[in-house]
Image 1: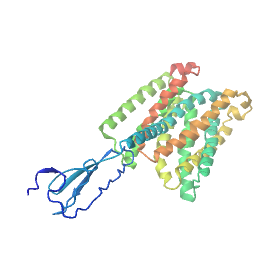
Image 2: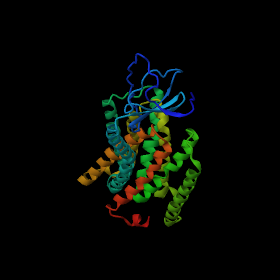
Image 3: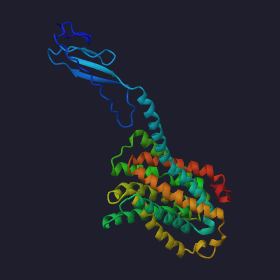
Length: 368
């Protein structure tokens, strides 16, 4: 008998004298993570030679079509399983999207809040107040969740370097630049850091940029030049580059880019959430010292001039602009592509510009 023609398993032509009953095992479908289980499961079976003496199950239980000894079967599954899994996956995808976007929303709106209180408190006081309480909150949260404290010289050395670059330099340059630029323009410049992150990630972690990515980097550099060079020209020839807010914002962007690259290195020695909190605490201490030496208004008898709105802005900047946003951002940085994550920072100037319209513009802001 030829074994080349397709056939459908039916009752054998010559059943045995004593037929045996067999129940077809229905194998449950095990979905892959992040996929919806199919209501129909395909099985590939190999029939033993001469193994046609047993009656197959009913056609509505197991449907098989094959060629020779190679058989493909379809088992009807539970169509209702898909209905329960799809909403769960949709909810998970929505939450992941929120966790990716939320840091940039908080950073953009925090820049607007900082812009309004810096003249009353001083730049370095705002930078220190943004880091110290937020870092303490993150450390307390991590400890409550049972996260391990850093231990050893390697862990604390990595966190200290991380805090100096990503916390102290980043926040110090940011607040200094905010005195001379608008929140919208400042956030555009500071969030150019994905350009640096893409290059550093390709060098240190082997992340590919590609032709499209390289073209985007070139366009980004051109955009930065169009933003910064005219602004420097407007200020006149008597102003050094250190007196330019755009220059301080550019330095802040580079500090954040290097800090983003350092996350994976720091996470080798310490828990990422605990390291995030401690790096803010360690980075805020030198900023507080500089604030005292700089005679910031908040530390020289003018803190009573703050209104409840100013206090709320400082609280929002510390809790949401640092504690929540830093924790979520660096948690995501340890999981996925650094280039993809940092590219979302272009959302920050959008939020800063939208909410910046609520803050009265000065002559300097209108000019920039």
